Length: 265
Picture 1 (cartoon, one colour):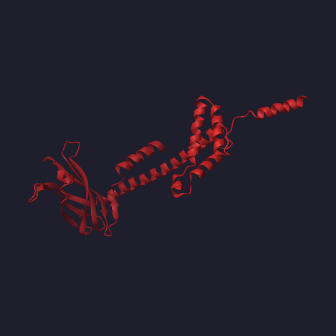
Picture 2 (cartoon, rainbow, N blue to C red):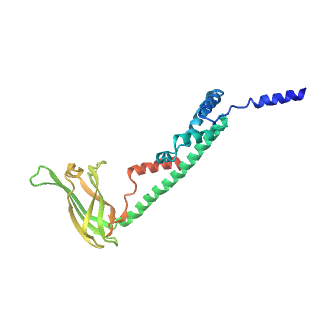
Picture 3 (tube, helix red, strand yellow):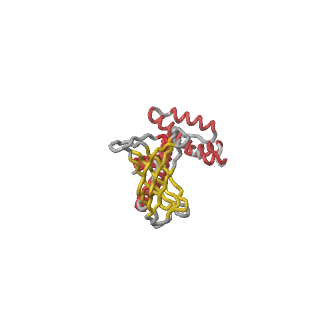
């Protein structure tokens, strides 16, 4: 008489296990989700609800949806298969694993991006040494009266020496107009010049460049004590391709690199 009673107790206990999700249909999944969720309380319930979202959204690939390789039905079907038969603890564990995998991929990508951006910085620093051989010997800026016009014409006068071993077809500069003792310049602006016939190694050239009078060059009103300095940032060879470029990262890229380093290094 005792043996059948023990079997009945074992069967009863087996039926009292943790509720599991049922992925056999949408209706079954909704009902089982409610059942599992209602069996939990407080922090456990919140973790389960959040874990369900993580698992569901992990199967969505926007690129494949856009190309038609993935549909709403296929996403739902895969999600149901992923969740089918799992208890609340198993769903939370799977969500934690998904998050860990995603963070690992993000870290790998972040470190790779740091490496790429750092390489740009290092190359720019190396190029500065070569660019220092392309010398701006004289730089002047003035706003002169323009005939038959009330506007003043901006003029940039440069004398340059090509001390590199290469002919140069175009040069890029950063011009700064600033007054001694002032921390903020009146103007910082980039400009470039396509050199007719180029400038050969060892040659000196004098240029008078006329920027657009309606640009910032034409609007600046610096005092008489202001000094115009010019920095060479890039030069192109005879094939019109960059020889040396020291411009490095943009401001946006610099901010990106700082954020990535803070996060992953």
